[in-house]
Image 1 (spheres, rainbow, N blue to C red):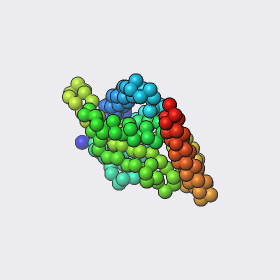
Image 2: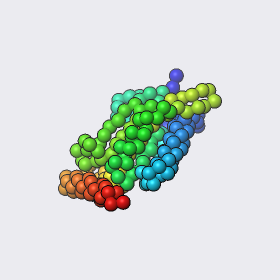
Image 3: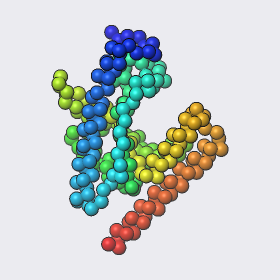
Image 4: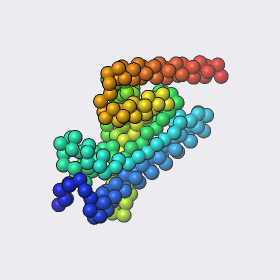
Length: 212
């Protein structure tokens, strides 16, 4: 039976949580290798790399526990594994919106990754203007005791979307998650500007392709 959460960790607790999180690190390693191979293959076939850069992260234990508590679920290791699907996170930043959907299509056709859920905040942005394509996947990770299916979240964005999201994140925490109304409106305008820029850049790329 798991110990009741007290907000403080004993040495044994730290070891157990570290062991729980290890497969998520391996899942990200697997995903990053697959994405790099995919990008290199596309580079050879189409003479263009759809990926600008990739970032990965593992949620910290206190963030996992806080998320469980927000869901009114006991912040235990078992529940973390069963109910939190973004412990392992990968952000893929692309040049163009079409690159995002191309990568998604390629992921959908793979046999070594299972897509569990998709949330398209590009076609349907959040009310604050946030845009991104979120994909929950399962990645098979081979461990000493066998193969474990590990959840991970992949976020696909353009450079413009990523710049906006990074700024919004800083403002969100600067104001303790309560952004003043005037800043919310300005952020929404900025998100709309970012969307227009993405559309304009796609148009330019298509024009260049038609001339080559």
